[in-house]
Image (cartoon, rainbow, N blue to C red; front, side, top):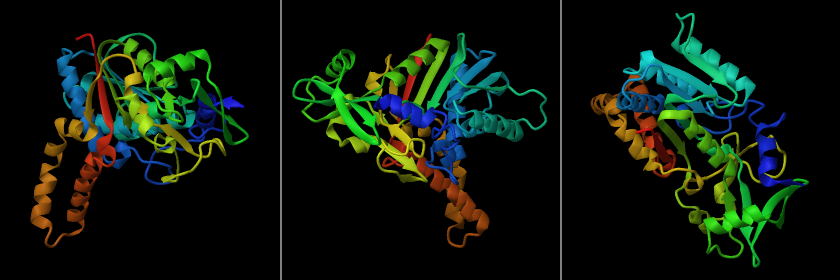
Amino acid sequence: MKRFDAFAEQALYGPDGFYTRSRGAGTTEADFITSPETSNLFGACVASYLDRVWHELGEPNPFVVVEGGSGNGKLCRDIFLAAQDCAKSLRYVMVERSDKQRDVALRMVAATCFTDSQEIPVAALRDLPRGQFTGVVIANELLDNLPPRIVKRTGTGWSELHVEDGSETWRSAPEDAQNMATAISTNAPGGACLPLQLKAAVWTKRALQLLDKGRLLVVDYGFRNSDQFLQLPRDEWLRTYRGHRRAGTPFSEPGSRDITCDVAFDQLPGDPLFQMQADWLKDHGLIEMTEWAREHWRNAAISPDARDVAIRSLLDEATALTDKEGLGNFVVAEWRVGD
């Protein structure tokens, strides 16, 4: 019998884990799609944000960007292809636990962005680097994959989710979990479940400690208030995916599916600023980046050719990124350090 967070950690990152076997994000032969795979526009907007922050921080050189959970390196590639003002100062660190994904990402970034360079300003690490720097830490859909502990309100306190032989089982929660759950939600009704996102909180604290001066930018699905979890069935915020489809229970066939949990942003340290992804992208140039495509399509819509249809697809990508029933409803949280 294992506590749920330990079970999920092994199922995702263990020797036969989901990410260890190089499953993950993408449009083909993958299990889910994130904003960078949806469109290059996402990376272009992040690049615009980095340019803005670089100016705000006094144009530091080097300007270090650390991306947690970098996967196949798609966001890194798009940033280097789009960054302008900060490009010569930019030093990028991809952090990815999967050895295979790190190797693929580094090769793809080099081949796409630095074909004529003997040295590239990119490194790939298994964990966050040591030492402080001036720059930005980015985490796009990372925290939802840091397994939480899960507790349920009972008549006498809280019980905690465990996994045994492919099934869920509940045991009385230890004192630390009891106290944390009660502090987070004092009025939880009986039977209500709640994630305790200690791993996400620890990662956020470590990321903030890296910054001498700069920003931490987290983009993920979740809620700003933990009480919102209490209003939903557990399988609405604790989900599995395989082959771009929901994949049922997280308790069986460990390693065969992604296990993800909405982020409780109020359980993270600090006092970030919040926006919805749809608004954040528009604030960082999405409308201006696609205005030419809208104008082109208005003129070509009556009798489009293949190029016109390809341009139209760019507008469809922008719509997907800002859809408030989907990616556009993701939370963008920004912590500012040293201002």
